[in-house]
Image (cartoon, rainbow, N blue to C red; front, side, top):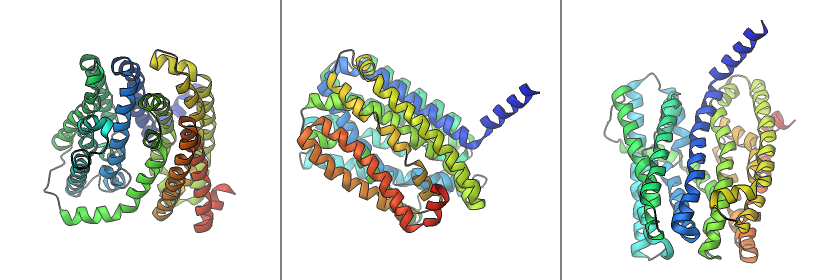
Length: 429
């Protein structure tokens, strides 16, 4: 009897949509983590720490512009797809317009880079690395993750992501052997991603019956206006979380950038955990909020306390294993990187603290509060990071990132309390 109950509970647990979403997102991020762990020592050994830092600096610029390419569609489009799951005509128009909009945005972002490099002579130390990284913008534009999230068919894109990362790793092993070849690293990542994405688009068209229509520019324009606050919120959040390397580049040499980027990449991979939790629980949380607020708050509290406990575990293990982790990834003793990693170990835990606030803002459609919180966090980070980095170098930027995570948690709580006390007291009372 107990065995049957156990099997029943496990089966229902696995069938839970939030659990499935999290598991498949975890597979995607785990494959990214694994390939990142394997590729880091290969790149550092083949192109050197300084070129590794410049490659990551170019990658930081591209990822920043990918926020423009995404333009909030990664949050709004899954909901629209879910609503129109059974309407192939509406779904076809939606998919055609979203991909058209993202390709136009990718073309705009590419033009910005080309003008900055060849017209204004910016990014002097890594111009060609950045130019060759442009392909990653189109890889982002064609990534159909949002579509499969809305269709609740995450298995295929999880497998495709793993295959893409394996192709990228194979490319590093076969073609990246000297510092002069560093410009091909991000290009290869963009090429493999774009190739797999095009195959996924073919699958969507041929096997799911999604037709391709000419872009409806009036509809695209309306969607861009509707997503403007999401875009600026994502942009501000990204600058706050990932802008440290760019700020550090104004005050440090390439070798320091390489050591910091090694520690930052490890921590930012771990910081994906709270973001994955929000993405996984968001659909179910939104339905509960609309139908039964008491059940919503119970659900959110249960998730929150478990996530915070796991965040404590992640932070502790990251701190304790920092020397071993850096030695494994770099194949040498980089004490500076160890110091950065131990300071930044608190980031995943502090990010977990804000999961409840962000989820409540999303389900209640409080885009204006997300916008305010994101830009207040961004301004705080830029000011504090600039001052501390100027005074303390790499340690300063680490401390600035830690304080930013604390600041945004307080900012979100204050904004919720002042603007929607029902939500605030519903969760915190």
